[in-house]
Length: 430
Image 1 (cartoon, helix red, strand yellow):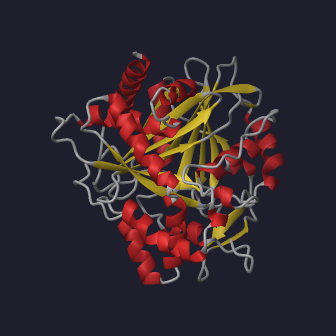
Image 2 (spheres, helix red, strand yellow):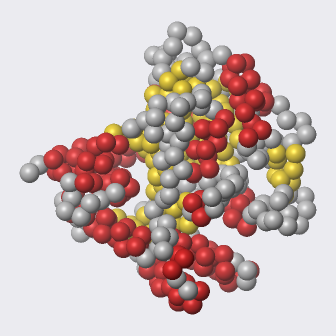
C-alpha cells in the first residue's frame, strides 16, 4: 500500500491479482486436519469465534474493486460470515483419498470477487472421526507468511505462545553498512546469478487447465534438523527439504542418470522482516536453486544444494532482486520484460516454498490440529507446485498439479517419502 492512498493495492498485490485467469485462481490453500471426535465440529460456534476476531485483519471484510483505473480495497457491504465459514458437503468423503479429491476441487474454484477473498470450508467427518478445514486465501491479500498470521489471529484457539515472526532465507544482514552505489552495482550481479541460466526443457512446461490434483506427505522437523547438522558444512531445514524433493523427482521422472533433465527450483522468499509493522500483503522475492537430479548419492545432492543456497543467501540475492524488479517496474515495458524472463520455464522448472507455521500445538474449537499442510497452485508452463509448512514439529508438504497435464501426483508423494528415508538413513550411517 501507499501512504498517499491506503486503499489502493500495492504494486505486488495488483500484479498477483492480474495473473488470475480462467485457469489460474490466484489463491493459496491451507489444509487443517483436526483430531478425531465423537461428533462434528459446531459450525455456528466456529462462525461466531471467527467473526469476533476479523476486525484485527485489514482486508478480512473488504473486497477488491476493479471498476476504476487501479484496483482498490473497499468495504464488502453485504458481508455475511456464513459465506466464508461453511460446511462443504462432499458425498462419501470418508478416506484420505476422498479428502484429497475434495480439496483438489476447492483448489480449482475461483474465489468470489464480490466478497472478501478468503473462505474456511469444513470437510467431513471422515470415516475415522477426523475433520478438515480447507482455508483459501487469495495471494493478492496475503503471501505465505501473512497467511500464517491470518490463521494465528483468526482461526487457532488462543494459545500461550504466538507463531514467531521469523526472518526468511535471503535476508539482508548488513544493509546499513552499504552505500547506495554499492547497492546499484550489486543488482546486475544478482540478476546474472539468478536469471539467464537457461536449462533443459522442463518436464513441467505444459499448458494447464483449471483442474487440480493434490497429494500430501509429512516429515518430522527434528529429523530434518538432525540431517542438516550431520553434514560437514551445516545444511538448513530448507536445504534438506530441497534435497528430499530432488530425490523424489529423480525417482518419479524415471529417467536414467544421464538423461534426467536439469531442473531449477524457484524458492520464494518472504521479505516481511523489512517492515517491523508489515501489513498482510505481499513482500516476496525468490532464489533459483539447481536440483542435481543426476547425482545418485543423497548426501552429495544435499551438500550441493546447501552450498548453492548458502552462497545465494550470503550475497543477499533475494533482496537485490526485489529492489531491482521494483526499480525496473517503474518503466512499464522494461518491467514486464524482466517479469517474463523471470517466469520463463527455462529459468526455473517448479516452485518450492517453505513457510514456518506454529511451533507449538494449536487447536480449533478445542480440537487439536493433527496436521497442517499448504498447497499453492501451478502456473502456466509450471504444472507442478510444492509447498511446505511446519506445525508443532511436523512439516506438512503439499503437492499440486493439473492432472490433465501431469497426472499421478500421489506417486510423487510416495517417491518423496522414500527419498526422505534414504537421506535419513544415509545421514545416520557412520
